Image (cartoon, rainbow, N blue to C red; front, top):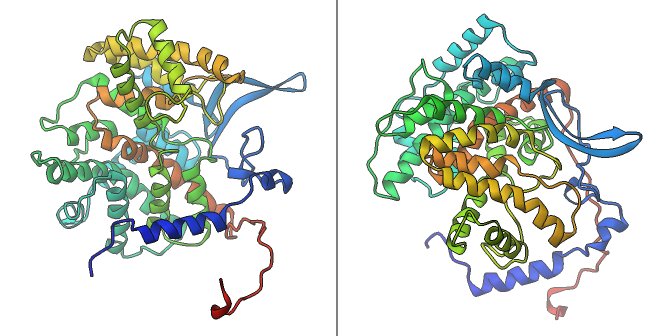
Length: 453
């Protein structure tokens, strides 16, 4: 008997039975005051815990009125703008410094940063034959699944895999932070070799290079990259490293950690969450939307043509017919996403280096027109602005990163935030997270088999 991979008519019929008997009337969520998606009617997340790792500010109290404001993101109390300006002004890479800040709650001094960077560099090593025996076998078309499988397999190489004492978990987390770029890039190399019939090359990370430099070096056949490319990728990793604690994959990290399970199972669960297109795959949607725009619009520099295309998007007449302009708007931010604002300041420079000025103007035009079109077509007057995914996909394409790696690169950054939240949960809470669901199924009598219709 072979492994069943087809949806049969029988399964389709059973799916309809499942749908019919599982559907919940939507009005009941409001009637019982149940926060669907753990959000209130204004889209605000239900408070499910406490954290001191990061914070998002998108509203301010103005004369007693909750008023939208330009978005601000804080890592351990430090404004992301100040953090980025700090290492950028000294022409340094920010990944290690920001990682230290998020994990340990304060900025490192020069010696602490050097020691920490050296520690991460020394941990950029996989078990012997791991690439051959794990990553190169049963390559998947989805890098996130390959990444999760490889990460879970590391459990079997860890002599203290189930030890959840703080020092051991910290050791496991820093190991994963160090090797995630290797797992991601090597998983793509295996995919490219087996699925696309491309040449196979495996470059080892170099201890003197930053995380961003190593990603570019390992990925490219000639291992070459420009200073601007490495600087912008490093910036992307910093901006994606953590986001307020309330996002889906970070909440998953808290939930799974609270059960007392091991680090590898916890991070695998977070990876499963991030894989979802509503979470980690948004920049891919943006890229594909722009691909469709290029096909549908004759002059991508014409505001009128762009505006008409955006209206078609909202009416479900273009791209994926979902009625969305991807990369515009955010569940938390309204006036601006600080990550997008920071990233945008470097996009034009990279576009000039790559000869992509025409695409840069197209992106800028969409960013300018989309809020106006959304306000007119949807009668939404809450601020709508570009989010970080609007530009990150464009940046990744200019860096030559394959689309298959977009979400894994996100994971290479967010593993830092997940690690900090796992440690926070272990340090502060000793109860398993057990939310309540209201049962609305009415009592029913058991009917003997022969008496059922």
